[in-house]
Amino acid sequence: MLFYLVINILLSILEKIPYRTKFGFSLAEELKYFYYYKIDYKKQKCLCGGNIITIGCPPDGWLIECSDCNLLIDED
Image (cartoon, rainbow, N blue to C red; front, top):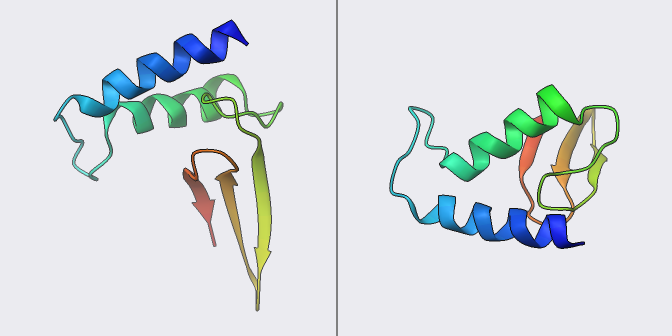
């Protein structure tokens, strides 16, 4: 629990830095993507502490996003 509190404080500080990547992502979003793809791909847990869920969207699509911070990770 303390881990996620510290991480959320760090993510809120990173959100306030005015730097954006060429795709428009903040440093906090880049850190979340890095954490999901490189570190925690199998456990399905976001860096903010939320669960990564896959939602089927009709007719033939799907979304992968965080249930807490609504970070869109992948879609089809």
